[in-house]
Amino acid sequence: MSAVPARATPPASEPTAGRLLAAFGALYVIWGSTYLAIRFAIETLPPLLMASARFLITGSLLYVWARSRGAPRPTRTQWKSAVVVGGLLFVAGNGSVVVAEQWVASGLVALLVASVPLWMVVLDWLWGSGLRPSIRVVSGLSMGFAGVAFLAWGSGTGVAGGHALAGSILVVFGSLAWAGGSIYVRHADVPRRPRLWVGMQMLAGGVLLLPVAAAAGEMARFEWAAVSLGSLLALAYLVVFGSLVAFSAYIWLLGVSTPARVGTYAYVNPVVALFLGWALAGEPLTFRSMVAAAIIVGSVVVITSERPGAGT
Image 1 (cartoon, rainbow, N blue to C red):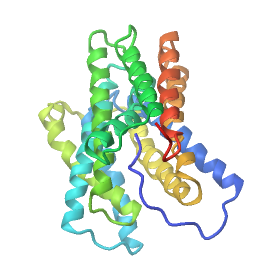
Image 2 (spheres, helix red, strand yellow):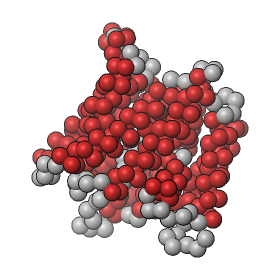
Image 3 (cartoon, helix red, strand yellow):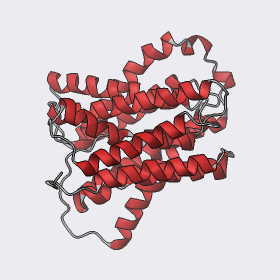
Image 4 (spheres, rainbow, N blue to C red):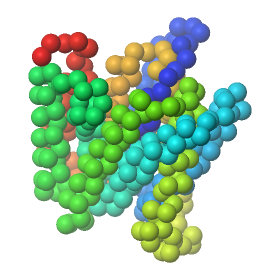
């Protein structure tokens, strides 16, 4: 999952092809690889505590960096917005991902998360702009939700028997929460500095995850002696590359490229995650998962490629 799109400052000069290629590569590969990194991190780290640590560290770094560069102190109203959005995105959204990856393959989790644009269309219609989806969008929605159902209720979805379906459903509800936070932020009072705003969201989400982790019994079960070097390296990767490097590339691209091109990460990341899980973690790459990938990714392409103002 990625951060909510934020305002970006136009570049002072035309970017080179090499910089564009590197930035898009970071967006596609790094964000696509975070699902596998989460799987490695939670092998010996409690899922919710790991997520809390990730967002507290990253959020603190982004917040301090933005404030040191002259970003104004956030208002109380802006902090309230950060708490709401951080709760929806990083507690309900990302929290569902880290918990579900205990039972569901990382690549398949990424495919289920690809349903976020589908939920955003539905929520925007019902409680956002109120604009009725076109026939093209409705067709894409139907195709996308069919792909999600085909994947979630299919055999071989996870790695832990009966927990697999529960984990898949959890990810779907988490994707719904992420979409809700993305719709909410359009009407919220937020800072104009993207890094400051995302740092606030992550700080709020990291703090909110702590009582959730405690309620799940993770703090009582946690033992430092049991944590492996691999899990710590995976957490470091999520902080440095998954959040700081890839997000910086994302913010830069928002200022030098079109939203449609930048938004292509939404349907490239799941495919990257699926193949990385298969190549590096031995996760199953079945015919069913490949068909589901084609259906879900295709539906997102159909919806996001529609021209504004297209007829119904």
